[in-house]
Length: 561
Picture 1 (tube, helix red, strand yellow):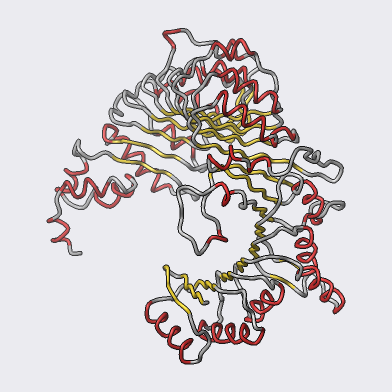
Picture 2 (picture 1 turned 135 degrees about the vertical axis):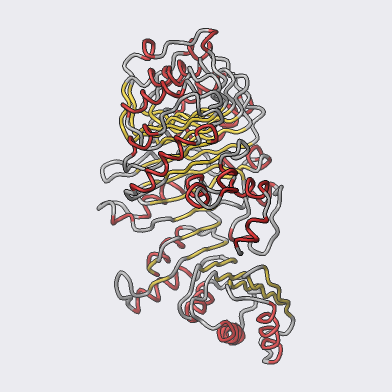
């Protein structure tokens, strides 16, 4: 675009474009261009969003920023500072005062604790500050004093306070319970540092209008019921808790006595307390104390060590697949990752094994009862623990849920695959990264025969491979899964599409495979021309007789009878 055509664009156009560009970049690009843009940059209609996010020392940029903040304070809408280089110098250079008439949002990351106190005193002069985020890598001491300063910011609606660690020996001194004239207008509160329940109670007394609350608790099972009962959170609809070693009894007591009407609840908990897997207790809590709940998320994490393993679940299998959970479309899935087992409960979404079906808003109870998925993010637990293998973890998973779908996210040795599939006889679908017959060691003929015997007993109908490097890998799946009905390959790597389809369908004919009726391959270069060419090849070479083809973006579907 020439300079003349740029000049013809309206100020309104630039005003809209500037809304998506870092204010520092706007200033550098237009400040000395000509008189028209100089006037535009100083117009009261232009508000700048400043973003400082540098990983290197750029003295020129810092100087320009200081000049920008000095000359245009009344035009700054937001400041986002995320840099550990010259952090204190940059933040102090803002020199917050009442000249910042329009600033509404402030994000200060990597800020030192000694700077926080100084800045908070300055922020009281900002007449329109609605959103404040403070993030520090330091350890907070007596953090109640910080909150006391923050709660003096009368316009604040959003607050996020993050720290690596935090302590307060006596919150009743640093932040006593709020009186009526100390109540704030904060609606969105994120407490992203360790905070015990009694400390949380003092903080919440200042935010009666909060509708979104997230807090972080460590090693705290002491709750003062009288304090909880004194808090009224009538507007709270979204509640997030992340906690370490909180017992289920403690959690249950908290929810029972908060008297809240949640629409959305999320709990991330690290503990060995198996009561978190008691579906019946969860049902009672939700029905009696969270009857308006629309979305529920649980992330329950248990950790394994060489000398310590969590208890094995003793309840009934598949309790989280009762009509209560299926009617709400909430589903349980389990992930084994390094030294952890992670139990997820969340609203159901279409999964990889449903690649030939449309996304639905509502799934039937019968459909959801069959959606029991195990994810193996890690299958080499012996590399973390001398005495544990993947099978120690499976012993903890199988009493909780019957597994119908398995997603293995690492390359797997065929011997281990055979052993895993043998221990999961109810599998209907399998997703693999790659299968190895040579790593971590060479495979003997006897092992190959034994593994084949173990694997071939499966009843798997749907298989997905993340990638194949050779056509023979697809043949291998056909040999292992005699009941296969649907086959998906996410990447053919460097294999020619025509060559693959020709060889694949010839292999099906020679093996006389009758069950397989659908193939899906992902080809980034797929277009209508390719589809026509492939269809012609299949017809002319009689690879399939009664078939249909369709393309959805880069996915090619071939279905036959």
